[in-house]
Length: 116
Image (cartoon, rainbow, N blue to C red):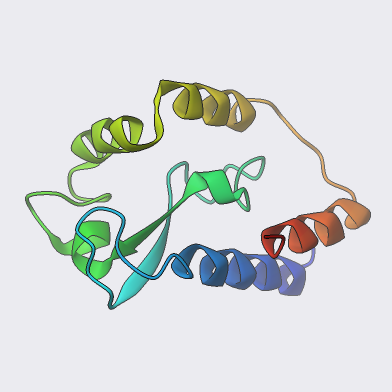
């Protein structure tokens, strides 16, 4: 895949996740980050909106008490509490299912990011 297309999809995904407007963990309104539950290396869910959390900077990377990156097991437990075991199981299954995208698929992914 072309780097420019990947960047376009990453930017759109991030903007869409941050449209939530507040941290899903602590309700702060800024600065907001878009966090991938399963990392960006997992292309099968990289641009899946169900794979994203809107988090403040602290809950994303800086807090030693609760942070998606510093305390990942606590974050995983919290995420499952918030979204449910079925969400986790479905997303993990999708993550573990190899998927090959065509150029047309990327256009559909971009369009799906902006669907309401």
